[in-house]
Length: 228
Ligand SMILES: [Zn+2]
Image (cartoon, rainbow, N blue to C red; front, side, top):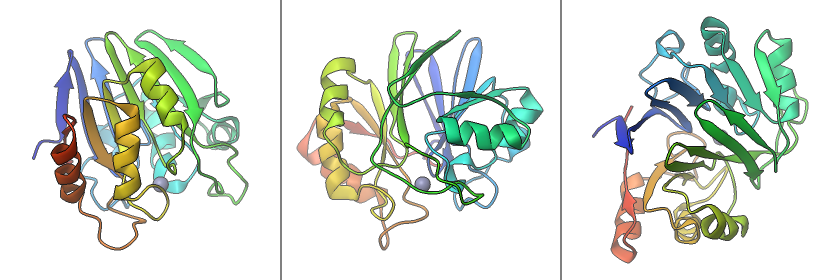
């Protein structure tokens, strides 16, 4: 089982849990880089070379090693305002963004959208609105859902933005279970789907192969299970 895929010259490497590194010819960024203490993680924070880091929200399993990675790469963490401020106080360069906002980068854009999820930062303060992040890279639209319940914005994202690939949580305790994730995949309509968030905070044992089997039996969607 591979740890990465290449679509339209963009490499997507799974770090485990909700974490990825996305890289192209002259850019690299991380999403939710949770490595230290993460069950699936193989890479160490020192291995991650990126110019930007994006956090879907401020739970510890999503902030992960972002601050260390930001510091060692002189990279910027982009996240919701409360999560960005938490990281800034701990010594990282940050950029805060509301849900609904879009920021431009050398590699494309990042659009923060609604995720149905809530909670506290590691310091006990609320992190505000959690996000799913839509990346529009050169010729590739990628949707990183983070943690979220099933909700109808997936229909809008599917029809307006037509993602090429979606990272969909299936763990069922902090976010969607497999039944709900199958509906999300259908609504998003992405031809390629990667299941995430099944190694920790699950409702019982969650097997990504069950998700893959059911998804591919009932649609033309390709499900890729990546192993760090
Ligand atoms: Zn989580």
